[in-house]
Image 1 (spheres, rainbow, N blue to C red):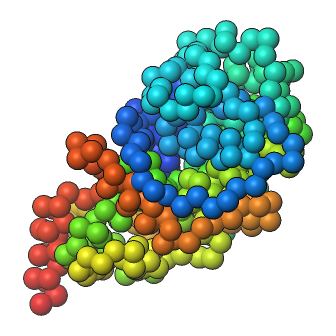
Image 2 (cartoon, helix red, strand yellow):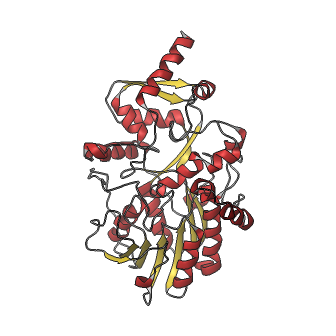
Image 3 (tube, helix red, strand yellow):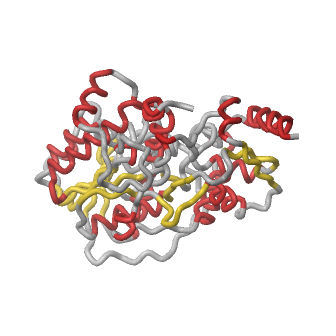
Length: 395
């Protein structure tokens, strides 16, 4: 539905950032990431296998830590026996983790006073989707922190036409970053260039002590953005579900808990370098994803695949109205086909899709009704209208 440039500057590229916490924010904006968990984190009974203690307890500073990705990191780090400190504005879910040290500051100001004179073994930077924030924090922490893990995004890659692109694929250059910032464009257009520039700043400041993780679409409990949650919720609602394409288009997602464990693991192993981090390990199609989700609910449901041309004709948007999916075009064919071999070899593992779908649905159902809104996914009336038109055309 969109040109390559429109794709990068619009909802699809920007929506990847939402996996880290909201778009009043895109990415993990605000000091701690924004609205992907909001105040309604819910209390779903999610799977928690036995977590062994780390051989060497670490002091870990998390910039952010209370929205979507952050809580999963905190929970896993604490279970491993590490000591965690949170640094954020104290506005998003301040009730979380009452026994964890919390330092207050605002990266937008910038105000890092609370971090001065302190030392940690490692930092996980969730909230810098503006490169200047990364520059400020690394300048302060270079001499007082052992390792710095920056949470980037596959949106740092500037060419989604390459199937199977690994970490060495082209990213936005410094010149493209400067151009994007100077243009005054919105966050959707500058998100990828900012992430790419922040990656360079991470390695410039920390060199072999720097770690960059590029997640794809982050999913799972506490994510009410709808980027994946829409599908378990919609399928559980039952009836006829409109699905995009013919089911063969690729999909890539990573459970927030698997991603968090990988990040803590990289710190424990004193890793270095850049890692594309999405999944699953084996290629996943949209059909595989939706039928896998259907398996976790007993609600009567039928899935109707509607081809891309028909969706385009009826102005159905990819990614935001049909989550996880983008229109198949040469310039976007690699969007859900990134090579994550390096991360897998370094310890990234993936739980079954059914577990992610079930836990996400259970979490969503645990929310108060007033918090069960999804910011993406097609409007039910529009879905019904398009389905009627589809059946009328096909008899």
